[in-house]
Each structure stands twice: as C-alpha cells, then as structure tokens.
Image (cartoon, rainbow, N blue to C red; front, side):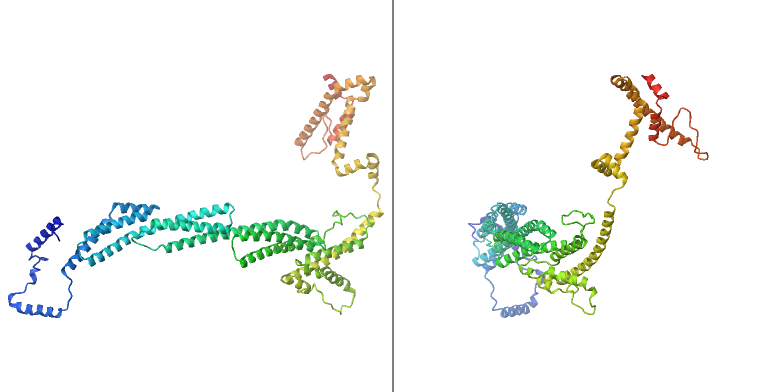
Amino acid sequence: MADSQHVADVAHCVANLRKRFHHSIAPGGLAGDRRGVVPASGFSFSAQEIWKIIKENKDLDLPAHKVMVATVRCEEIANEKYDLFASNKDWCELKEAVESGPVPGFGKNANSLLSNSLSEYDAEANYFDEGVRSAKQKQLQEKLLQLVQPAFQIALGHVRSGVLEKFKEAFDKALNRGEGFSSAANSCVESYMARFDEGCADVVIEIADWDTSKVREKLRRDIDAHVSSVRASKISELVSSYEEKLKEALSAPVETLLDGANKDTWPSIRKLLNRETQSAVSGFSAELDRFDMDEETKKSMIVTLEDYAKGMIEAKAREEASRVLIRMKDSHDSDSMPRVWTGKEDIRAITKSSRSACLKLLSVMAVIRLADADDIYDIEKTLKVALEDSSSGSGKDKSITTLDPLASSTWEQVRMVRRELVEPECMEITESETKMKACWYKLDQKLSRNQKEANNRSNNWLPPPWAIIALLILGFNEFMTLLRNPLYVCFIFVGYLLVKALWVQLDIAGEFRNGALPGLISLSTKFIPIIMNLMRKLAEEGQSAAADNHNRNPSKSYNRPVPSGRVTSSSSSSNVTSLGKRTNSTEFTSSSKDE
C-alpha cells in the first residue's frame, strides 16, 4: 500500500501491526499461543516432524501473498458496500414506494443506485489483484441483485395489473361504441401489449438484465381469458335475444293456428316456422361473423337456434294436445254460441258433424308435422277408419280380428313422420281415442234426452195464463224486464201502498170538489205534514212492537189486548193500509190543528 496515496490507511495499519508485535506472546499474536511451546529437550523430535510435514506437502501450491491479501480486503470491501446499499435512504424510500404502488422510473433509479455501489467497490479495490477483485465484484453484484429482485417483481406486477385493467376498460368502451368484437379485441390486445412492453422498459434494470417474458405471457393469458369470457357472455346474450325473438314471433301465431285446427294448420305452421327461422338465422349469422369464429362452431350454433324454434313449436303443440279432449267436448255450435234446443234440430246430423269435427281436430293434434313430406300420410283417414270400424264392428263376427292401429304402442305412419315421438304419442292417442269413444256414447245419450225434452216443449209451447195476462197489460219488453229483475215487482207494490195511503190521508177527491186551483193549494199545504205524520206513526208502531216483544212473558198467551189509541198490524204494508182507511181519525184532526 503506497504511503503517499493512503497516508491515513497506512498509519492505521502500522498501528495495528505494532499492537500485534507488542502482544506477540498473547493468544492470537504473531508468536502464536505459548501454551503449545515445545521444550528444548524435544526440539529435535519436533524439527523432524516439521520436516516430515514439509516433505509430504512439497507440492502444495500456496497462493501468493498478494492474492491472499486481495481476497481478504476485497471481501471486506464487498460486505461493506452491501451493508451500505441495504441501509441506503434512497433505496429504502424506493422500496417502500414500489410496495405501495407503481413508481415511474423504478428501473432507472434502481440501476443508478446499483451502479454507484459497484463503482465505489471498484474504486476501493482497484489496487488489489484483478482476478480476485472481479470475482468479489461479481459476488457483490449477485447479492445486490438478490436484494433488489423482490422490489423489481412487485414493480413488474404493478405494470401488468395496470395494463390489464386499462385493457378491460378500453375493450368494454370499444364494444359499447358498436365496434366489431373481433376487431376490437385484436386492436386492444396489440395496443396494450405494446403498453406493457413500454412499462417493462421503464421497470427493467440494465445491470440485472432479467427476463420479463414469463410476466408478459401471464398478461397475455389473462387478456385472452377476459376476451373469452366476454365473448361467451356476448354470445349467450345474443342467443338469448334471438331465442326471445323467435318465441315472440312463433308463440302467439302457432297457438292461434292450433286453436283453429284445420287441414291448413300444419302447412301454415311450417310456412311460419321457415319464414321466422330464416329471418332469425340470417341476422344471427351476421352477428356471429363479428366474433371471428370457425365455420363448424357457427353452423352448430345456427342448428341449435333452429332446433330451439322447432322445439318451441313441439312444446306448444303438446300443450294444445293436452287440452284436446276438453275442446272435443265443446257444446257450442259452429258460430261459437251456446246451443239452444228447439226440438226441430236433426240430432243425427249434429252428431255426425260433431264427430267429424272431433276427428279433424284430433288428426291435427295427433302428430307433429314440421316437414313437407309429413303431409303424405292421411292421419284423419286412419283415425276415422280405426274409430268408426271399432264402433260399427260390434254387430259383426267377433271371431274375425283386425289390427287396430291405435291399440298398438307403435304406429307405423307416426314412426315414419316423427320417429322420436312414436311410443309416447301413440299411447296418448290411444288413451285419447278411448276417452273420445266414451264421450261420443255420452253425447248420444245426452242428445237423445235433449231431443225428448225438445219434443215435450214443442207439445206445450203456450206460456202459463198469468204470463199471457202480464204480456197483454205490460207489453213484451216490460214483461221481460220484470222477469229479469223480480225486485221491481216489490218496489211497485210498496209504491202502490204509499200512493194509496197518501190518497186517503189527503182526501184528494174531496179537495178537488171546490175546483182545481183551491184543491192544489190545499194539497200543497197539507202534503208535508201528512208525510211527517205518516213517518212518525210508522216509527211509533215499530217502537211499540219492539217494546211488546221485550216485555212479553213467554209463559203467558201470545194474544194480548191492544192498548187504546194504538193501531198495530203484522207488517208495514198493513200499517200503511190501516192508516189509509182512517180518513176522519184523530190524526187528520191533529194535522189540521197544526195547520
């Protein structure tokens, strides 16, 4: 060590060396530990042992003195610089900042701190052996990078998460603007992967030269997963919207067509199905093109949409078929009005037409025909032959058995038309036809009874005498009004009693003897008092009747004498009548006194 360049260090080293010489006989001194001193008598033997060891280790390649000194000093300098870097205020602040959030210029700052630490090491270890100095510098750099690497990974994670969140926002905005899904995804992926590369360049430490490809791949996987989830969600919403459109377009028309079942029902349903399905498929296919999917997946989704439309029609047909027996028992005529039997109907013709209508309805509901080739099978004829033969064959020879297509669990024509509906549908048809035969039998009995009742009514077509008198007095319209509202009769009767009572109380005939004008004046002065008198008397009669019922002893006879001056009756109508008959009673006198 040149004393002219490092005066202070030389003085320090000389002082330490002087202490070591001064305490040479102490443990650890230059003279070694005196506890292992060999006595003079054993020196020859000790010398022989030392020489023996020297001869055995004559090939030992001990390092040079400067190498050993360089190793010790460079290691001491490296440890010192590592401790200084770990406790560096700038590094501690940078580490805390990156743990709390992204730090712009992290790589540049960390690289500067590392370079300064290594530069200081090089400056202090410059005069030692180059090989030792380089090896210790490499060890120091590795230790410093191990110290910095966790913070670097945190900073890189901040860049990745920030780019991912910004990608999600930009991707959603692009989709909301109406941009195509595939183009929006590709443009956003390219843009934000480039942003990640820029962020990595800001975080990367030049000295370390760490590989960020794994973090980049993880970011790309996260972006692809998000794009896939959004794609699946959008496709699901698209499928649901088109299924809802098909449901709205097919549900009500199909229900209407099945409700008015006729020979054109299924052709009309097929025409409606083809039109609405083609319209939906064209729009659905155009929407799928925006998702950049392969043709096989696209065709599979289109077929699924078409199957949904067919399945909805099949479900609606089964729903209507479950109510077919109720509709077959309908008692309305061809105008959908309740039938009124007059006795002039042709019961057999009505029965025949009803059976024909039931067969037509059942032939429409029995089999689902969604293909044009399904119409070649005459389902109505098969049902007619099977049902009429079974009903008319009761008088024939029972030994001759014929095959009933409805009694079998497999119906050949239905198998060819809708193979997947063969057995369950045929069983339902068989049960329905059995019930329909029973309904026809009950219908015949009911029609016979109705015919008898109609004949009886035709023999007694005249109304009763009281009805004839009422018709002559009131007229047809008024008579029908009274029949519809019998309460009118009660109101008319009560009104008649009130008018009669007023006539008697007012003595209208006597008042008009002196002329019309004096009679009207007299009646106008007596009308209100008479009304009040009648109301008061009715109230008194009601109170007296209630008091009599309260004070009546059940053990005594019910026939009690009526108190003087009190008029009782069994009903309010008799009260009014009795009051009307007492023309010259005290009531009239009291009313005249009030005048």
